[in-house]
Amino acid sequence: MRILLLTHTFNSLTQRLAAELQRRGHETSIEFDIADSVTAEAVALFKPDLVVAPYLRRAIPESVWSRHVCLVVHPGIVGDRGPSALDWALQDGEAEWGVTVLQAEAEMDAGPVWATAALPLREAKKSSIYRNEVTQAAVTAVLAAVEKFVAGAKPTPLADWPEARGRLRPLMKQADRAIDWQRDDSATVLRKINAADGFPGVADSLFGIPCHIFDAWPEASLSGVSSVGAGRIIGRREAAILRRTIDGAVWIGHARREGGFKLPVTLAFPVETSELAELQLAAWWRVDHATWQDIAWEESGPVGFLHFEFYNGAMSTTQCRRLREALAWAKTRPVRVIVLAGGADFWSNGIHLNVIEAAESPADESWNNINAMNDLALELIDSGRQITVAALAGNAGAGGCFLARAADFVWAREGVMLNPHYKNMGNLYGSEYWTYLLPRRVGEQGAGEIMRNRQPLTARSAVEIGFSDACLAGDPEAFRIDVARRAMEIAASPDLDQRLAAKRERRAADEAAKPLAAYREEELAQMRRNFYGFDPSYHVARHHFVRKSLASWTPRHLARHRDLGWQG
Image (cartoon, rainbow, N blue to C red):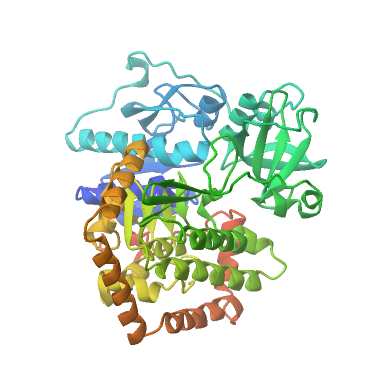
């Protein structure tokens, strides 16, 4: 069929759905929900058999839903209605939830049901639940609904659905999210911040200054600070602060001041946090689940795992330098395989655009950040004593994809989305040695197509084109077990010494043919034009990305129906 995906933005759910529908032979095109007239025009151009709306913030116009079957993906159980479905479920502590695919009608979320899929609710950030459990359930439900539509089936009226326990609930307001630091325990504080994570955050104040807070983590130990009053800030670690609750404390990683955008707390409040005590970890390399830790190391015999949990996968200059130091140290350990495990939701999305936007000179900070990324990639490429594995449990994009490709193997979890291209950010050229790493895997022509087409890759399709080496289990715990098993098998391989020797020989031959420094110099010459040249496209695109500006048009590489040569 011909399916139009109508969406507020090309988020990870929309990317995954488009890929899954295409894999099943459907023809898809994307249109951003900008205005009723634009949506109607897209439908007229594409002439879809079906419209699927994975992520909307307003109603589909009657001129469209009255003439075409429109399937709306609602992140709630059957009968749940309202714009804050997932927020209420998380804040209320629901143990199970669901995704429902409804047919659009005049009343929001009240149309007949095409399909539904259940999901468990972890105690986690809303953004994490959305990218993982909600996305997987949505894919399951949408594919089921499409199959029913193809078969000529009809949806079930909401009133006839058995045991529908959902109800109409209003938009969650900041008054519903408000934290009472003198009464709320840590579990309550975490639920409230988690239910608002990503967007809109919890309206609060830090250092007496109004702001919205995000990115909370529990703290299990209050050694030496138990006398600090509830609500008081205890200290800092890297970019996060620790704040007292009535029964413990929570870490707060990010904040947005009024009129600003989301930043690590120490950058949002640089003067205030500079006076806080630094709360050092006993040993940064040891995984400690009782506290907040953005970089950690663990060893299991001949295999070492380097974890790095960076919010939204963005890696600032400082984070890149710290991670490079950690990797350099890890290479001195008595391990034969190093697994770069990344974080639960993201492996890496490359340079930190928000930190760059906040800098006194965004051009200079862009330059510093890309060079720090390159230093990290070089540290990974130059690892002749170990086999290295990039184990992608979460999504990766832009420079993060090529940082992963700097490892000997890339293993990705089923369901992970990769966006190995840069041009969407104001025609950015990109670095991280991609001109060396990518053609070796997919050829010069394949590399050109990836960069030019700017399409996301599923974990499976990345293997099929040669970008990745394996697509492993979709369940996160099963993925971790599979990664550990495979890494241990490599470490125990009787021919490991020969494989490492061959790896060093290949690197030496490549270096003799063209030094890595030459690739870097050529890439940075292009990046210098992006950062300092006469074309401001990168700076304009970054500004709009960071400040979440509403889209005014759909990029042409997504809206195929708007191509000049499109034949409807």
